[in-house]
Image (cartoon, rainbow, N blue to C red; front, side, top):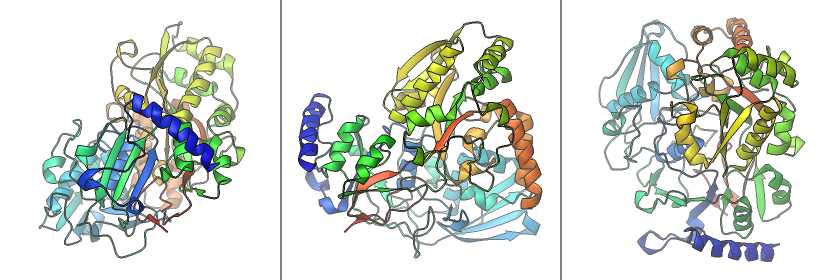
Length: 535
């Protein structure tokens, strides 16, 4: 098996020379070269082009963020917020003030100290973009530093999710230097100086090919075990290399031959093969799983009409998507009708009943009522993401069965990430539909689920717009009693299945694949690279 893999690897290397990918599997040269045992080579799921984890919600940029930056708080495996850069906090004035102190001695990558002013400026920038941050901003009176290591958040009204907001796992409030965080939230940052366990090596960045990080010698990990996103983030590898290899067979051959260490998102039909190889192991790092979603663009017809979005939901048979995206029934649910993760505390499915089986005739009727008359519907198809591409093909076929005139725009994932942010008309560089996924504990709450944000112009790309639903989410977030929250959650869920900020196409598990001699992998809901060592 190893000899076969090496043969395919040699063949792929010849091809990589021709396509500009020479050197992906080789060690670095010159003064930056590190011992192989202290270098972690990772096949990542997408090309890193955007460095700003506030400007985009792209998974690849968020994972970059967790290497380069740190957070004030983080959630543990019980989804409880725990101090990270913070040493702790006090709640004052009957819940209207939160006084937060930083751990002493923390430094940015340029050697400057991490100050309360840096944290304040970073939080303000994050609050302008993130849905839960926006919610927090709406109840915040002020955020001001009190001294070099302490700042205070003062609220207009009681809001019991301040620490939970700062601890959110997906698209968190990463702490940046003040000069970087002063960049307007709608402008991408270009300065990669961070506060986290690894330093971005900008001079070795090769978009479309390779990203390099080196250990931050000044990073002070918490003196406690790593637990989900919380605890001690020990940078045990001197160097991390992200390799973008869009051909999954080439990536599998590289992993099997030991040329790479970590395959971040192997196609799920590879899992059985990988598990039979004694030199490899698969690890389930996400207890909640991944939610697949179809995002309609609510700015333009027909999907600015509720009926067209309902028509889209009537075309979805989740198991059809799961069969082509996942394949292995052990890794997916035949149906999940919860916007907040089936199996989570908020995983109710009320309102999904009319959509559990496809109804093409109903979809045609609703499209007609919405004013659709055969216009081209632009669907963005990511050609270099196998699972997303497969799901998009199912979507295209289902639309065509309903008589929709589909205009398929085939692009790579990085291009899709840029294009989905465009508010242009679909026929002028915009779009009608694209597919993505999300996961983790933030998805399980209406206030932090980024694609559930329905604040119109302030929502994620697709710009779902339902201020009545938003008001329900606000009421849920203000209520501190879990029992009193339940009826509000039920109203939220029924309303969401009526207005459909997005359409769920399934829920599944995505294991990672690594060399068997790698230890310390943290089940953090997403790939993270601290605490990993080779034994």
